[in-house]
Image 1: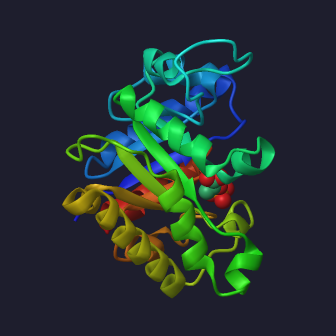
Image 2: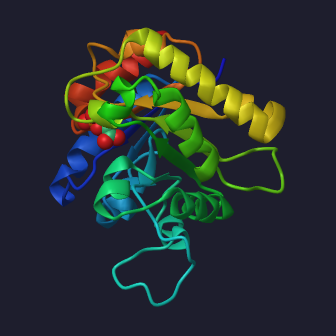
Image 3: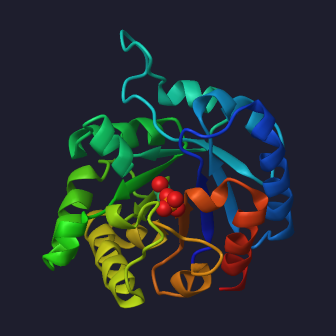
Length: 249
Ligand code: PEP
């Protein structure tokens, strides 16, 4: 079984005074050392947050696929790595919808992240209509196959996949546990087809309204190797029960 990985996504929340929450969360991470914990903060906080504690990894929420160049307002994978990021979320549904990112963009970003020896957290997920039309699995697996990075060496793949049903993000609603199990199994199979046995070592995270009340059930499902947590990661009070649930599964 893979060591559980719980990643917070602060989205566009957090200013310097919120570093106090990072300190509190890092103490909880240290107290649950059988779980890997990371927080993906706004780019402006990466450097200060990554200096707080070795027990909590810090990540970015996006990066550009190119190393440098004429891309006003963007930051590259090398830039966030230099600030101390160890993880980068790519292809979050909010970027796919707000910034029009497609699978080709996401794949290029994942490759750029991995080239900097950081872990790419590649997000995929279906809309509510796709779920209700009973083709969520085929939609998500197609999205995955088109977004997965091409790599020469399948050893030590610094890649995670986050299954995030779009309709579950920030809504308080989650799929049934059977639906999560079916999706994560299909993702695992696709990863093994793509990367051979190394596909078994890739963490598959569940994301979408995970919180202290539902984390234990979700994290007990086979091939749910952790969580990507938005709203419930903003304070230690909300995040600690998720970390604690992961520690017990
Ligand atoms: C997310 O945006 O990645 C997410 C999972 O958000 P929430 O937990 O708030 O649904």
